[in-house]
Image (cartoon, protein in one colour):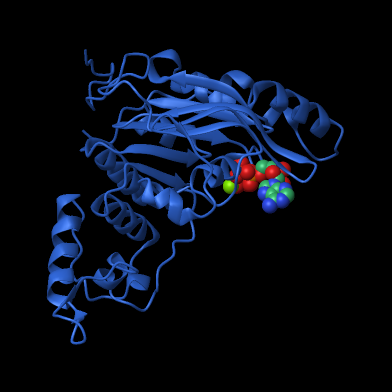
Length: 304
Ligand SMILES: Nc1ncnc2c1ncn2[C@@H]1O[C@H](COP(=O)(O)OP(=O)(O)OP(=O)(O)O)[C@@H](O)[C@H]1O
Ligand SMILES: [Mg+2]
């Protein structure tokens, strides 16, 4: 059975109901990772279902990048299990993850800034035509396909000939999302795609995260920002000091609670106490824990 969220703005399946095929594409079970004697991640459980956005939140050094590096094949877990389609796996390279349909868009996107948008869209997987040894790039087909695919995701760029370096950070993220969708990704990992963006551009990226979900992808969205997470998320995992301190579906947690988890009410109190001993800081001016709540926002326009 499928129900929509209370917001009614996007028709997704709730995590605690059996999703369409019932099984997560990617799962971590009691997984952990140590770098030498630094334990970066410990006892982590995570499930990624098709057509759902799983948000991973946490403060600096909480272990978010470590978590996605395991899934994307850059690092290997040292504890617990990592399963893809129910099978235990251990990737040695990002290529192996990609072959299983797990695509990662990093914050510092791997693009060639001076190459046209369409060329970057096909970077490393160019279309060719003609028999060997006369085979050459099929430029017309690549341009046409890139244009169709971007439009298909609702991304309209004036000129695909422009160097990708001239696009805004948000537009580049969107091209990378459309590219992953076109090349058949089943799981899309986004490491802080909105971290360096302003309000408007963040909204655009959130819209394409929702579009990727509508196309059936399981999205892992890494962010510091509970507001961004709550606009598109179906499931929320909060990491703190390498362990998962919250693992809740959308109907189990409010934006208010999520914000409090991120802000760390008790830590804020401790900080206030420390600051009270520093001259020149008026602790009465600092926000109270109750003020760290935020109005409930609904999904951005056009995200459904
Ligand atoms: N290659 C490494 N070698 C040793 N320690 C590492 C390595 N990578 C990460 N760590 C440590 O593991 C912990 C988790 O780091 P990680 O980069 O996963 O955090 P994060 O949540 O992504 O933080 P941020 O928000 O700053 O990106 C940190 O204490 C970090 O110093
Ligand atoms: Mg990180």
